[in-house]
Image (cartoon, rainbow, N blue to C red):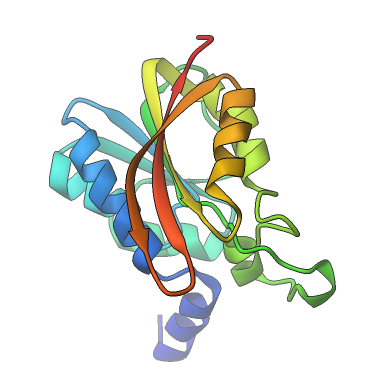
Amino acid sequence: MDLADRRGIERDVYQPAEDSALLADVAASVVGPDDLVLDVGTGSGFVAGRIAEETGARVIGSDLNPHACRRARERGVPVVRGNLTEPFVDGAFDVVTFNPPYLPTDPETEWDDWMEVALSGGETGLAVVEPFLASVGRVLAPDGVVLLLASSLAGVEAVVELAVDGGFSAVALRDDSYPFETLTVLKLIQTDA
């Protein structure tokens, strides 16, 4: 692959930032070496790669973006192209991690490309979080947990309410504040499993 092709992929794949580092840090402290982990929306594979390297756990990534799948594979992350948890069997994963697209976006200013898919959470910032929470319980093993990154831009309280309405209890494991937002990693456990 030449440099021009590489730059095209980099423009089409979300690059790790503060949110990615926070989720990776927290996940590495929670995941055990015997866990099977699904990193939804793996992007470049940064979070999945860190979890695997730091814990020894088996980690699989998933992403809708074919460029992200390619990039994650280059990083050594096994990855499945698919939407959220759809490609996976029931009860498979001990831990599911997700750094969702959470930027509130006006529909009239969306840019209709892979970076929009990676960043835009729709008008409320929750357009991807809602279907994720509706589907993730299906792929969790008994006693499985979800580590979900939430932003004050979309409303951490709103994410917690959606999780509780979806049959989860939610605990904030860590908050990091920045001038433009506060990021929180939530640990979700099914209450009706």
